[in-house]
Length: 481
Image 1 (cartoon, rainbow, N blue to C red):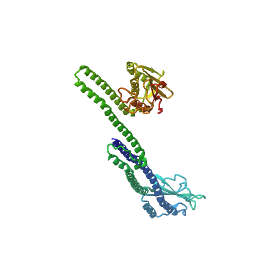
Image 2: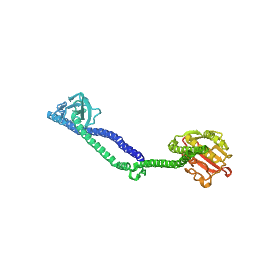
Image 3: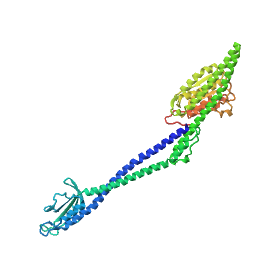
Image 4: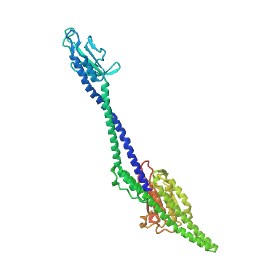
């Protein structure tokens, strides 16, 4: 069972690593790819414009070379073969316009879009525009005419040459497709390398799985953390802690079964002997005497079974200690004292209860604390002789509640006080029936409640005093001993 739990934890970790790597790395990588493609497309357009703008610049120079004012007006001597060659180079339609700055004289396509900004002399400028619903690229150039057309001040001539963008777009889209293909292959290679890296990185976990699966069912040895990557060692440490707790619980259960079988064997054997004796005895008085002995034996066996069950219940409720409830220790102790009062009176004991006079709240499980107080009071009532005194008192300081059970009974030697809480161990002064579980149960319960059990001599060195210390109920503040 311990191996199954450890393997489930390891399997969960492996699956989570693979999924998280894919979920966390691939989407951001895809976003980065889209951003890189967008930037690449912009750079491609800039590169395409730069290349094709040189062609536009050449057309502007060819047109500018053919402009003449010798006839007294604006004229252009440009062979049509030049425009045909430029259209062939541009792989689209070409438009041009030659005009003065004031627009009084114009040649070519007069409705070509004007430059969006003022042109600088002898410096070509390029811009995008719309011409009859088509996207065009326009080159613009201006210079001073060699001879004024009118007046005495020289006029500026403006040359506009435009071409449709089909060739540029086709060129840019072709380069973009190549970039997309290259980036797609790059992402694929990254994904494959990442998958291969994950597989290689998780090999130690697969070896760990193989080791755990092939373990014997009762093999609860810790996993060696040195055999796994540093990132996985906290998980291995947690699994080892869980295995250790499970091993402790399994050993405790085995110990309980061994103790139960050992302790129940004797009373059952005695009871069997008494039954055989009663069946063979012809005298009624002897039979009645045997039945009385059998009844006392059954009572002892019932008490032993109840204590064994209480001990098993204490061990099984360890995990529930974290789900504490607020308990009024005054009310709980008084209720337990009332249940034990009839037995104390039957033995002629002076049983007193001293409350703290105020509400004292502790944290814990009421069923377990009741079991601990009941066992301690039953021990006191059993060992204190008739006419003795037993006192149950409650007190508290700023952080700790104290429950004290004192008596003037036979007490306990000093060498036995250090062994308080050992199972099935009874003191030298113990008489009558008993299995030595009362103090063990009480000590286990108190320690599970972050408390402490102390055993000292009674008042004036006579008898025994048992003190229970429990932390007061303070929200989000449990101070253990």
